[in-house]
Image 1 (cartoon, helix red, strand yellow):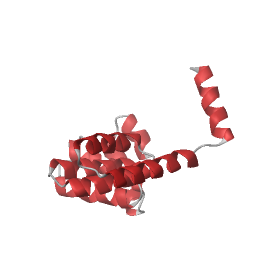
Image 2 (cartoon, helix red, strand yellow; image 1 turned 120 degrees about the vertical axis):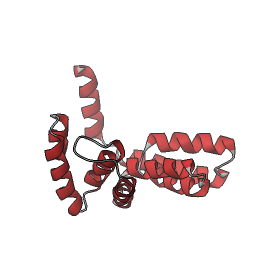
Image 3 (tube, one colour; image 1 turned 90 degrees about the vertical axis):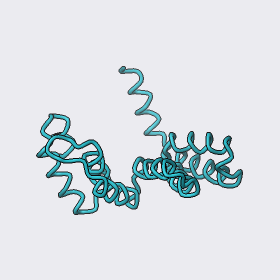
Amino acid sequence: MGARHYLEGDYGTAFEYLTKAAELDNAEAHYQLSRFYREGVVGVEKDERKRLYHLEEAAIGGHPFARHDLGCREAENGNYERTTRHLIIAASLGYELSMEMLKANHARGYVSKEDFATALRAHQAALDATKSPQRETAEKWEKEWK
């Protein structure tokens, strides 16, 4: 409901629904609230403390984008070991951009060969876990209808 209201431009109602969903530990709602507080969406003032709280809650709840964003935040602060840990977790959840960043950071010497190999295996396992004949049929059907 929150996403629908957001897409319709009803940010106040979206915020209310997302807040209720976050109270029920919905990781997506926490992630979206972190974006509200980062951007200062209409009716919600920018608040870095609240943004970080919701980002961490979303990451703990298994949200790969949130985990990736925490890794980026740690990189901005120069905490490359923590960056690597967050990116490995996001990559193991199948998030491609985290895998790309790990690859780039490995080339720069920030990520060890062992950590990169571990992340690569976990990322591939996550991708393999999402494969099924039904999903492949749906993807093929979607491509044909575009």
